[in-house]
Amino acid sequence: MRRDRFRGQGQLGRLPRRVACALTVGALLAACSATPRPPIPADTRSATSVSASPVGSSAPATSGAPAAVPTPSAPAIASSAPSGLPSGRATPRYPTAPARPPTPLAAFGYSVAPVTSAQLGASWHPGCPVGPAQLRQIRLVYWGFDNQPHTGTLVVHASVVAATVQVFATLYRARFPIRSIRPASDFGGDDDASMAADNTSGFNCRYVSGPGPRRWSVHAYGQAIDVNPVENPYLDGVSVRPAAGAAYLDRSRYRPGMALRGGVLVAAFAAVGWAWGGNWSPPDYQHFSATGG
Image (cartoon, rainbow, N blue to C red; front, side):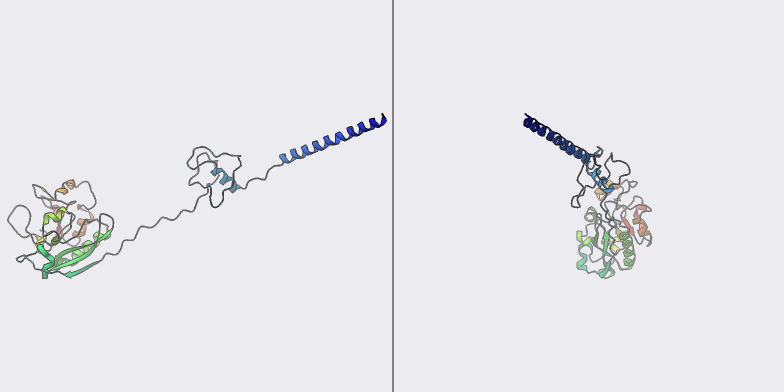
């Protein structure tokens, strides 16, 4: 009996130690869970908050939820701060590339050369008031309606070459758009075909259009230039030439390429002493001449 009693006491004596161990382990776990976690650095919190809400979303960033810190290969950076972000948290941004400057305007260029009767084609014939020896062919750069530089050819009298070059240099630097610059010979000397193509041209051995006695046009002397005929039509009192120019009869509504009183085109010719047909009645908006006719 005594032996049995002592054995029971040994078993009971060991039981409290097990309980004590269990309580000790539990206390340690509780202590660990109660230990405060180290704070997330300020920049990491900011990046974490941004990544918690997609760009453009109106939902505020979720706070308190753990989130992985973005890596350099996939940064969680928004182009603008999502709505709902706490104030005072800067949104990281990629460096913004500086705006590209406008493309510089290439230098105006031109060349002047004699012209032959073969080059003049149907725009000249024997009996015209001037011969090929009195004319010059100017190749020059002009600004197109496509906002690009182009090269055209203009035939004028030798006496007005300098004035012509000055005018078109001014127009080019002002980026005044011109549809086309080709000699009348490219259209077989047909003035109506040249106008319908909205072509700017100079010399053409032809008579004056419209009523009155038949007489040589100033174009037949190479001392007149028609610019953008569609945007600047000729009104002969009966019709509009070219026909497409009817869309530009309202001169109060400016559109590119138009000749207007006080505008770049009219001022450029006035600067070299040329007259504008837009002052006539009926008007010839496309026409500029050295003689006033």
